Length: 300
Image 1 (cartoon, helix red, strand yellow):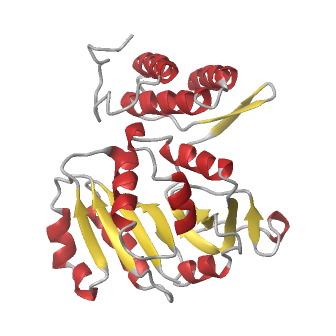
Image 2 (cartoon, one colour; image 1 turned 90 degrees about the vertical axis):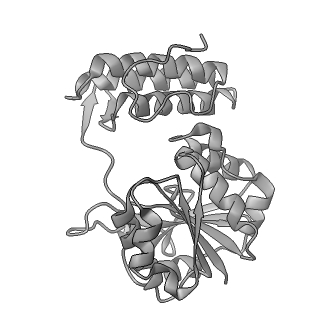
C-alpha cells in the first residue's frame, strides 16, 4: 500500500527532525514524506539538509510563501500530495512522532474494506509512562467511531476525492474538527488502532468539575482562543446547530473562571470577538499570531 505522509511545520526544526527520524525508521515506510513549511524563519530547510534528511530521496520539502497556520498548511500539503499516486494520506503535526517502529505497519494492517475511511493511531502523551488502550476499550484491536485528527491520521484517497481538502480559512484550530465532520457526513468508516502508537504533547493542563459538568484547562494565548471560539462556533452554526454553538461558547467561557490562567480579561475579549465572527461566518487570518490587542477592524 502506498502512503504519502504530510507534516506541517513552523519554526520547530528540532521537533520536525525527530518526527522525520521516526518516520524514516518505520518497518513500513511512507512512499513519500511531504514537509509543508509554513514560512519558517529558523532555517528549517538548511537544518534538515545538514542532518541528511533529504539523502533518502523520499522526503519532499514544500515551502509556503507565508504562514497560513496549521489549517492552511494541511490544505496546501494535501493538495500538493494529491498529485502523488497513493492509496491514502497520513496527516500529522511536527511536534508529535511515531512512538514505535511499527506504528505505520499496525495502522495499515487495520484499514477497513470500506474505501472511504479515516484510520488513526492511538495517542500517548508521556514518553516515560505511556498509557495504552485497555482491552476493554476496543473490539478487534480498534476503537470504532473514534479518531484524534490530525495526529497520525490516515485518510483514504477515495475519501479525499469525495470531500475535498481541509479548509485553510480556519487558520488554526477547528479545521481538523470540520474535516472529521465532513468525513462522517460522507459516510466514512472511522476508527482508532490501539497498537499503532503515536506520541503527541499533552494539550490539557488539568480538569475540574462544576455541578454535573467537566471542564478542561486547554486555555492558551488570547489570539489562539479567538480562533478556538470562532472556528468552533462556525463549525456548529454551518450545520444548523446555533443553540449548541451558543452553549458550547458559554461553557468554554465559564470554564476560564475555574482555572489559574494569565490574561483572563483580554482572553475573554478575544473569545467574545471570536464568537461574533463565528456567527457571521468571518474566516481567514483575521488575528495575527502573538497579537495582544483586538484588531481595529472587527467586522462587527
